[in-house]
Amino acid sequence: MAPTAKTQRLRPAAKAWRAAAVVAMTVLFLGGTTVGDDDWWPFSPWRMFSTSTSPNGAVRSTFIQVRTANAPEMWAQAPINPDSVGLNRAEVEGNLDRIARDPAMLGTLAASHAKLRPHEAAWIGIRVLIRNYALKGGGPTGEYRDDLVAEWAAP
Amino acid sequence: MTRWLFTAMPLGRLAIFRTLVYLYVVIDVLWLQTSGWYHGYVDPIWYEPLRLGQLLHLPAATVVLVQTLKWGSVAAALVAATGRLPRLAGTVVAVCWIWYMYVAYAYGKVDHDRGDFVVALLLLPTVGSAYWRDRRLSEAAGFVLRAAQLAAIATYFLSAWAKVRFGGWEWVNSATMARAVVRRGTPWVKWLLDVPELLHLTQWGLFVAEMSSPLIFVVPEKWRRRMVMGWFAFHAVTYASITIAFWPHLVMMLAFLPLETYADRFRSWSLTRRSGRVGVDAGEAAAGEAAAGERMPEAAADGGAR
Image (cartoon, rainbow over all chains, first blue to last red; front, side, top):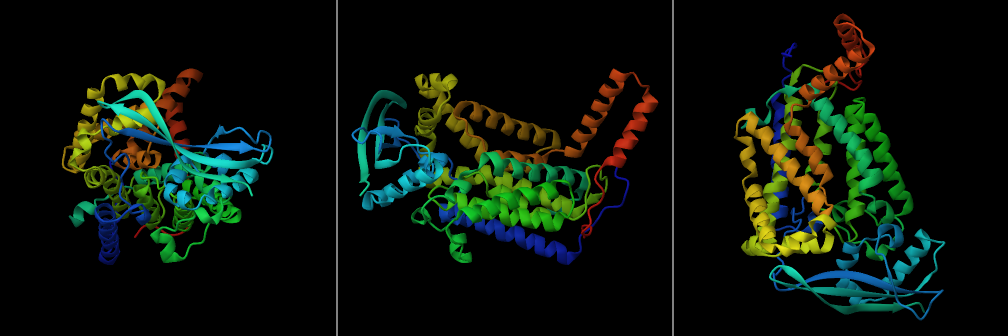
């Protein structure tokens, strides 16, 4: 269907500030990509899958194990999900250095777990481990090694 | 350049795009990006203010804050999706949704697929009244659609740039895709790990496609649509392989398409189908179409585009 009414134009001033907004956002996005980092969000670099992985290195995957009030002697794998501890795995992974320095941070996960899942057994111990899957020629070899990052026990 | 940035486009296209964007906001907040809501329950020790939060002194999340932002986004988006109060409701959506995403990202992990959607939410309120079957051409509408296109393509181009910056030029020869398949691969793509050459080749293909993505603005219209469809196909395969989809970005890519034409085709198709089933003649079908036109949302109250 052909346009039936006349075109709605913008006044020069309306165009000027819109163009200025585009220039400003362009500068911010280019700045974020060239010198910025994640904390520049929403102008942070679009770095999805941007890191290089060595074809003969290792793929690291973080997980947590917990001891519960029901089975205080046993370490069992527990999910790192928003609906279990309020955080997801990548958020815990992004804080591994802080957790290693201050394992008490893990105690707050037991607290948020108690708030989000009040009917489950309370966590009295938490430890974070990294599983390193070995790669060879860009494929996994089937071997892995676990490294302990930090451990917390309820006082 | 200015003329290109302000190419007049149909208000109907903008109105449909706007409805889709705001309906997506509802889906996003309720089902797709829910980590902000859970951060209301997390100890503030995990809060790591981003620059935006430092600038605006945004506090750590609380349950009350995340509930307000969540339901504020939903309520305002439902109003804005109907085309009513586009400036007011659109502004409320922009503030609530961006803040809600800020809460989601200020705890150690930032998603990298939402920069372009932010641009759309900030600019959509600059267009006033527009309804789905609006045939008028408008420079204000054209500007918002153009800006959404630019932001969507910047996502590809600048992500290639980020790969060079963070992964180095050797990114194309690294095992990034193998890593993604190891960590998140669906059962039907695990076989890819046995043919690392194919994953390697895919990395080259993706990098070249992203680097050359701005060409979409200079090719003829027919090829532009094919390129958009190509990107949609790429995202569909990605989703099937590693269950990652950049949903808000996919909505942004719709800014390239003649949505009002698709809506017309869909309308006449559904009318034909309906009239075929009940056996009415063509005259009644045409009358039905006229009636459907009168049911479209009225021009919204808070002023036309200038």
